[in-house]
Length: 333
Figure: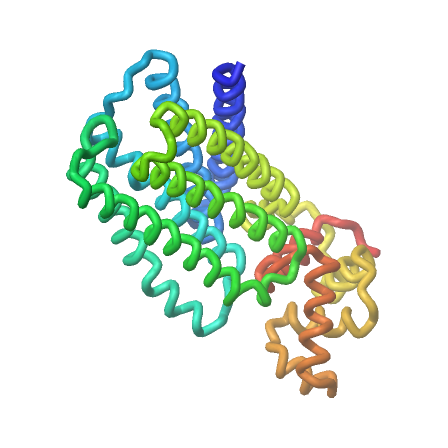
């Protein structure tokens, strides 16, 4: 019963991942100028998640159905880096969604690639040279190294994800992105910690290797299924197509910039003051410039911008501009 359930879960997860990849390919083919940062980050995260799912799907079949527990160097190397690769791809996607101008974020961006490369190299070296084809060792010192490495590497992933969220969360104003980032961050971290905990439990002889397989594959299959479902749901909800598709406006009646602003303001029930702030923000003015133009404080401008982003369900000014431009095919109001 458990075997059938896990197979079904992994199968559904793989289909969801393939659907997400298909959406990204379709979007990318409609853009002649190349993929944006957000599109690349989304594709990277989805590809890594499906590689992890397929790897565990195949490994589960080999071990629990065919009874083949021996893993060659390639399989051990892939097993050792795939979880950290998923953590890395998720950090890059968080950064692409938030696009925080926080200067402290630049420092974390500077070291993210290097740190995660070190994590994956260290993990691969341990699994290749310290463990045999059955993920075991007779050396006590090797067991200690594996246990310490699993703890340190797992905590490092958590620290980086938490740092990106902490530094950029205030710049993320729409609820959909907030909920998506927080929920998937919890799932990704739990998946990594669960993997680390089960591996450590095996080496301190608290969990049998057979139980280890069931625990890893069962929990990971469920988490990956949820993550992929949330990712597709988020893509549909946010509808990033205005960022990637170019519209043909030749046959549409021309609308002035002010007409477009008024149309969006009416559709999303903006107040008159929010409409004024919205119009200046669309023209490219910064918050201090808007405050000077409207004779209000910068704090008031920030509050209005927060309300505008919430009502329009956007997270950046780039999305705001594309939302306005996407209204050009509407009739005049």
